[in-house]
Image (tube, rainbow, N blue to C red; front, side, top):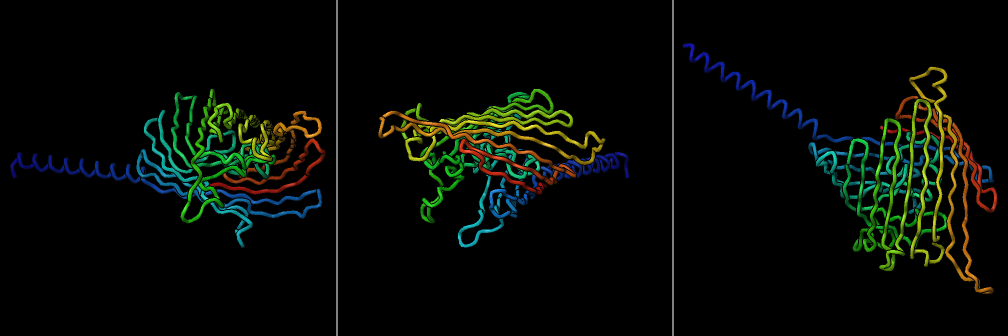
Length: 378
C-alpha cells in the first residue's frame, strides 16, 4: 500500500473518531438537558390543645413534584398535593394541583412562565417546604394574611436584572374578593377553579377580574435577602381607587448560627368591603429569631434550632352607620401569637419539631397549643 493510501486511511479514521466523539458529546448533552425529575415533601403533626378540644394527629401534606426538562431552555414544573390523608364522602381533606406550568429560560435576565403559578407574594408562599420553617405549622400570618400556598392561573416573566437583583411579574386570574372574611383571605382564592360555580360543561376559573403580582428581591451579600412584593386587582367597579391592593416587605438574615426573619403586609380590599363580612383593611406582620444550639457544642453534622416568633395582625371592620346615633363606626380586630420551640435537622432534607403557641385577640385568650411535627423534602 502506498504512503498516499495510508495517509488517506489515517485521515478517514481521524474523521470517523472526531464524528464519534462529537456524536457522544451531543448525546450526553441531550441526556443531561432532557430529563425527568420526581421529588416531593410532606409533614406530620401532633397537636394538643389546652381549651378542651381533643388532641389531633394528622398527615397534613403529602406532595409529589413531577418536573421535566425538554432541553436547555424549555421546562415543565408541577406539584400535586394531598392534604389530611383522604377525602371521604366529599369531606375531610383535599387533593389538588398546587402548581403546573411551562417555563422557558431565554437569558439569565429573561424567562417566561405560563400555567398555574405560585404567586411571588411574601416570604413563604413560594418557599413553603416544611424543612424551611421551624414551627410545626406555618406562621399564622402566612396562613391568614398571605394565604399560603396561593397559586393562580396566568403568565409572566422573571429573571435577574443584576447579580444581586431578581424580579418576577405575573398576570393571573384574581381573587374572588367578596369571599374574604374577618378570618382571612383563603376563601377568596380560586387556584384555577371557581369551585361550586363550575361544572363539567362550564369549567375553569373566573377570569373577569385579572390581577398583577410582582416581586423584587435584593441579595447584597450571602445570607441576606430583602424583598418587596405587591398585588393589584381590579375591583367590582372600574375605579382604580377602589381596587384591591396588597403590599408586602420581607427580610431574611442568616449569619453563622443566627437566623432572623421578618415580614409585614398591608391590604386594602377596595370595593370588596361593600359586601357583608369583608374587612376594609388588613395589616400586620411578624418577626422570628432562631439560633443553632449545636454550634455551641461544635456539632456540624446536624442542627438544633431554638426559635421564638411574635406575630401581630388585625382586620378593620367596614365603616357602618349606627342606626340609633347615625354616626359612622368602624374598628380593628387585632390578633397576636407567640410561638417558641425547637427544630432538629439531622440533615438538610429532614426536620423534627416541637413548639408551643399562644394566641389571643382583643377579647382575651384565644388558644394555647403544644405541637410535635416531622417533615421531609427530596
